[in-house]
Amino acid sequence: MPGILEWRPPLLPDLFDWLESGLPGFPARHGAPVHGIRIEEQLTDDAYLLRAELPGLDVEKDVRIDVTHDVLSLRAERGEETRERHHTEFRYGTFARSVRLPAGARVDEVRAEYKDGILTVTVPLTAVEKPSVTHVEVRRAE
Image (tube, rainbow, N blue to C red; front, side):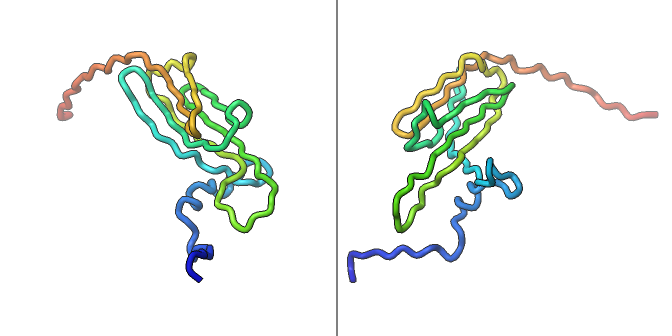
């Protein structure tokens, strides 16, 4: 009958499902997998920008951002809604991602904004002098 689509599970698991399901042996609390957070990174002369896809979350309650030394960590929780459904491809549970910040990151000035399902984290940067290079001559030993 035209106009009716029947969903059939793929024969092979989706590559993104496999990659984002977490590493075997590293479960989240209570054995649930930790899903990855998809990000975009941009480095400008004065800031490091990280954009993360986090649709459908209450950022004040469900999202946590921490900076430890030079690592920025994002963690989010999406609780599963209890309703009858035939099929879902939504992800529920814990989502996490950590990135190493560039040299000169001013971690005490990190800002975050959330709009239209995208979390944007801005980390101001201090200009870092490029290290000088010293050439060392190699001589043959006698």
